[in-house]
Image 1 (cartoon, rainbow, N blue to C red):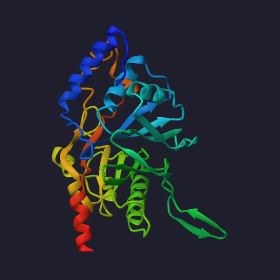
Image 2 (cartoon, one colour; image 1 turned 30 degrees about the horizontal axis):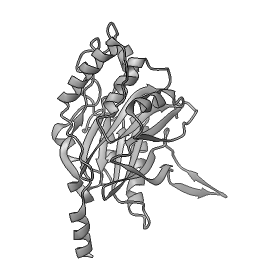
Image 3 (cartoon, one colour; image 1 turned 180 degrees about the vertical axis):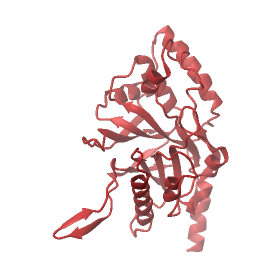
Image 4 (spheres, rainbow, N blue to C red; image 1 turned 180 degrees about the horizontal axis):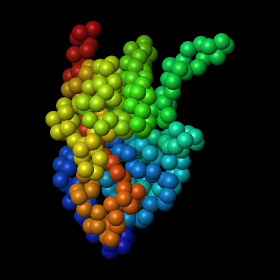
Length: 314
């Protein structure tokens, strides 16, 4: 981390933030053994230039993980570049294009990762909804407002695909269920493809699911996706009040042993704004950091035993 010669106020804020990070009890990752994976909705990141303090705080939070799927990254990437400069020369970013209409909201999805522990494996693409032939054209019956974005990575001898999404918001639950069902079906079809890049598919992001009793949640798990045990055990809310389950991490049950018992949210808010931003109101705080907390889980990347079992079983 390269915070450099910051002001006295930012230095105080960073020390306060570090104390809040400690409370999250995020275990250190171990090279070729474990990685910490997170998803974070950084509110309107890039729409309006962040303060210097906010950029340092965001970098400090991202630096707790090995790879982060970021949603609500906007078309202007200057703040992302400022954050990467603080994170240092080992950090990289892969990001999607933005969609300029109201549904797309000029948003991108990005993966920010530490190349010392994770390498990019070649695939980076938006997920396309299924198409049917209509006349001479192949058209999707419905589409995602903001296309899910996937990329392939490798850590140790563990190859995996991350797919991050930002599901539409609104009062029309039927349309949201339809969009989520489409995504669940897409992942199910993808993993069954003969030449799929990897069957270790981790699906995460902001699903705008208020609770795990919601029809929206039922739609997401309808095709076999499950939540890592660490997150089931703690059942963390990812809004600032920690009472809504908007953000989720799902995976396929084939390799449940890959997931450790470590996971949760990083509460950078902790009920107090002014120790990070003196004199600031809570609503303004959400546009400097976010109205969402990062959701994270630790993954085992040393899978030699799994691979040997597969060889024996044919």
